[in-house]
Image 1 (cartoon, rainbow, N blue to C red):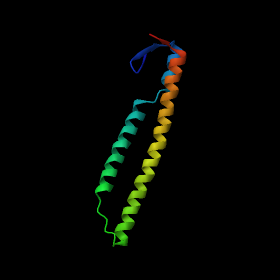
Image 2: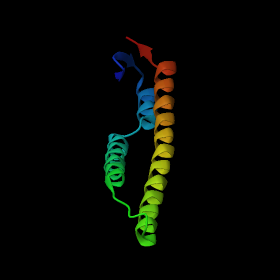
Image 3: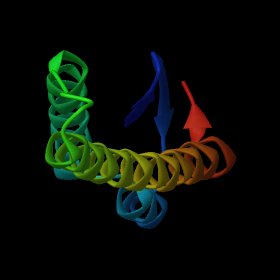
Image 4: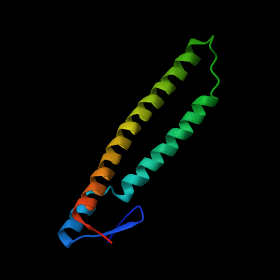
Length: 101
């Protein structure tokens, strides 16, 4: 049986196996959650950072840190979209091929 948001579906063995292959793994979910927490921590750190605007070095270091953060955040957003597409494919497959109970 497969639970989708409180609704249970029953599938034949082969269909169940295919559904499980489509489902994002717990490791994928945990990895995204970990990356999200790391980005939130980095955002907090950047927001609290004091930049001496009269110092080119200070401004350059901040801009490099900000650029790195923005790159990671953009990559994270892409990976979340990919993850969500996988979840949608899994849910759609289960709903189309399994029997609700």
